[in-house]
Structures are given as structure tokens and as C-alpha cells.
Length: 291
Image 1 (tube, one colour):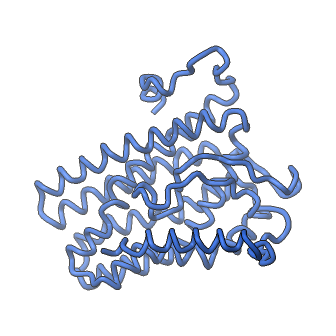
Image 2 (cartoon, helix red, strand yellow):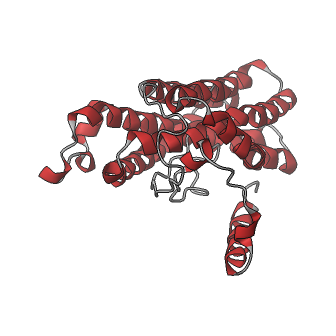
Image 3 (cartoon, rainbow, N blue to C red):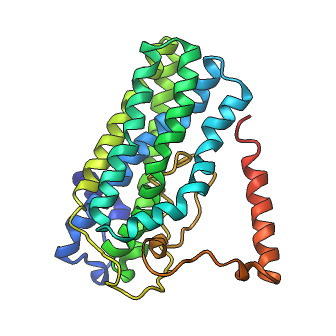
């Protein structure tokens, strides 16, 4: 991955003011490796999971549970996951959450060759919903990890390159997956692309292991931390790489420490109207997803 990033022009500094400090180079390479391999997951397993469910006879409701169920799990477990992360060093917590969550991709890879289609659908739904719980901790924790690992003056530099690398690998992986599916039987083809996705998930987790020394316990820094990160990659998000839901993210490290952020008074007045409009807008975007 380091050799690849050296060859791509947008990974090379454009001037002397953008020379990466030696102490940050290895850290940045792990962040690039994480998102590069995650792009392989997004372009194979995540992109074709709902398609596979439809091919083996899943109903509209079942496909909806696979595609929208993780969002429901995120809604329920975001605050508890933030509480859980409060008392733990962020680097090891992110790595352990990633290991548990990404077992899901191995389950996907084994299903087509081992179980009957009707059983596969049930396993797809329950595995996706249950293993999204550690994925919530991964998504929140990774945003905190990114904010700690990358100094604020380098966040645009790193996030821009991560987003570019994600897009390139996602497109290439999707084309490769389509090529494989066109030329193989249903069960063999999906086993292959899900195995490719699992390899990507494992390698992405390996790069998170390289960031395990980054620790940040409550009280290390001020509680009011809400800088823009700008990294559209969501490693704990089952919708990652599908276009919907990729937005400029605000650092969620505030969920991992500090005071209770659940304040209903902030939605009163004009701000509440804006939030309602945004909710309606995003609801309309996600409604057609099961189709």
C-alpha cells in the first residue's frame, strides 16, 4: 500500500509546506491502508449483498432489514457505545471492535456454499443486525481515533487522500466483482466476491492494529471538541461506499468522553425546523434503498 500511495500523484506533497513529519508518516500510511482495503469491502461485499439476497429469493421486507436494519441498530446503540468508549483507550477499543464486527464478512463468504437459500436469508439478516452493534462502536471510535491521530492542520490532507483512494478502489472492485459474477455460477461467484471482501476487511483491520498505540482517555483534552474531520469513509457503516450516507462528518469523539450530549432543548425554534427538514430529506433518500 505504501508503494501504491507513492505512485499516485495526489499522494505526493505539492510543496515544501506539505512535507509530512517523520513521526506522522507511518500513522498516515496505516490510515491510507485502512481505507484502501475497506474500499475493496465496499466494492464487493457491501455493494452486492442486497443483490445476492434478491437473487436467492429474499422478500422486499427482508431486503429492507438487510439494508436499513444497520441504521436502526446505529440509532439504538450510538449513545451506549459512546458510554462504553469513554473509559477505554481509543486505539485498542477501535481495533477490538473492528475484529468482532468484521467477522460478519467471513460469515457472508461461507453462506453461499454451505446453507440452503431460505436459511441463508435468515442468517444474513440476524448476522447483519447483531454484528452491527460492535460496528457502531467502530464507527464512533474511528472518528475519535482519526481526530487524535491526525493533527488538525493535516486533516484535510489525509482525509482528501483517503476519500480519493476509497473512490478509486471502490470503482475497481465493483467492476471486478461484476466481471466475476458474469462468468461464474451464482453460488461460486458470490462466494468469490464475498471472500475478496473478507480479505479486504481483514487487511483493513490489520492497519487499524497498526494504530493501536494511539490512546486517549477521558480528561486528556477539553470536552468541547467538534472539529470537522471531512473523512467520508465510515468503517463501521454497512452502507459505506454506496453513495448514500457519505457526507462530511463531524468528529464524534465528543461521544467518547465528557458530559451527556442528549439535550432536547436545542431542537426548539428555527433550529428544530431545520433538523426536521433534514430528517425528511434523508428519509426520502433512504426509502427507495430496498428497491
